[in-house]
Image (cartoon, rainbow, N blue to C red; front, side, top):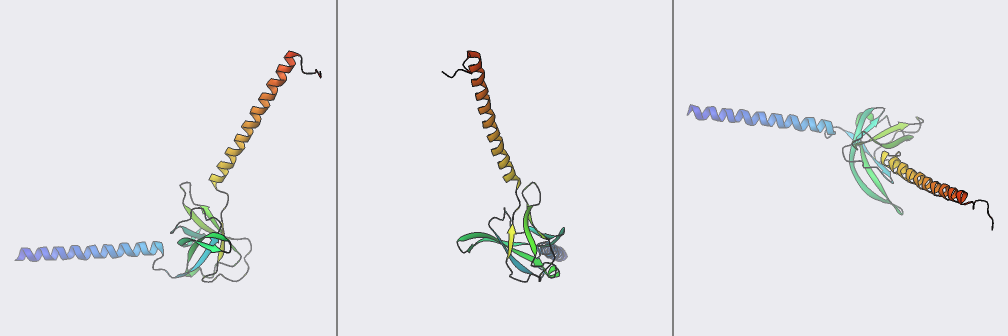
Length: 182
């Protein structure tokens, strides 16, 4: 009988510890992802949002002030735009003005992205829940690499053509035909 009670007590302790660890884990994940944090959303639209994903950080002056809550496509007149729903933590509500620029940047070489908010001029009212902002994407490494490849191919073609012309010129010079008109 005592052995059965010891097992029940041990089992109960493990169940309680498991629940405590699960609660602590859920709370820490919730804090990291902003699940339990208050805030507001700003839809950011652009022609291309460069692989932005749910959970990517929103950064202002090096501080993480929110995250990408969702991504989707939306119709805007004749165009279809990419849209990211940005969740901004409540304590930064009075930091983002309507003059802010929103840029999607590569966070690292692995392909992770972040939304970087910057200001050329700090003017205008503060953004509020639901205000649509325009997102831009700077020139990416992939675009630069493609452009360089195309340029190198063009240089190669020009070089090949110059070699061909020099060979023809040499041949005509050696044959004595270079200055013959008839």
